[in-house]
Image 1 (cartoon, rainbow, N blue to C red):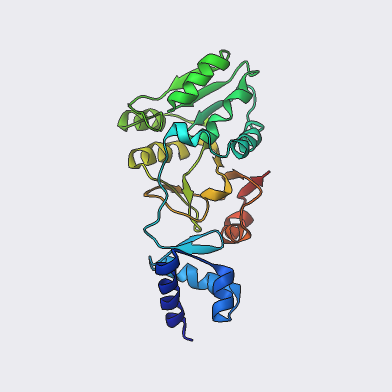
Image 2: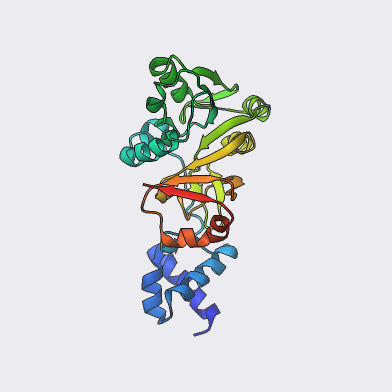
Amino acid sequence: MFIEERHEKILEILKYKKRVEVQELSELFKVSEDTIRRDLRIMEQNGKVHRTYGGAILPEKVNSYKDFTVREKIKTDVKESIAAIAASFIQEHDTILLDGSTTVAKIIPLLSNFKDLTVITNSIAISHDIVIHCPNIKLYITGGLVKNDVANVIGIEGVNDIEKLYVDKVFLTALSISHSGELTTPIIEEAYIKEAMLKAGREIYILADSSKFGQKSLAEFGKIKSEYTIITDDKLPDEIQHDLKDLINRGLKIISK
């Protein structure tokens, strides 16, 4: 079977099953799993599929946000483990910039003993928790429009505020991280905020559980760089690390627990 025929057959299977796995395609076509991964990589580059853990879905199935109150109850143990690792990088006297994700929010309970820490955020929820639980922390919140469903402040005012900053450490997440390292979010206005955050830090930490990898959302706000640190869980597929191998060889750190 020619490669083009195999790609057409994969699309036919996807239209019927909505999702395909590398292993099942390898067995079906009697080719190696590496061959199937290469097929899916080519198909993604041509816009025909989105690769996921160990397989692929049709490209219209991109990630979308759930409300903050829903997201904060999902995978709490995983988020707390990731946040604990992230907090271990924070030192007394640091100025840190936090985005408004529910994973980053799990850092706040771990900061109560800091006496000389400055936090800047666009998150109403994080700001509230700091005021209540961490009175020793100096807190700044960026300006703009409050987007109630995600409990974040967005808009050009916030972007302008962040573009004036240079902080010790930035902690943020992406709803989706593609195989090629694109960081994406379903909210266009939030993409501008996150893009500015990536440029504002001496050290950048991406907090994302393994389910965020291998997918795309609507708006790209940056790409993973070799100087970044990714903090995730222990279920990150080997193929993701393989896709990021060049960046890892140049210094990208991936920490999991």
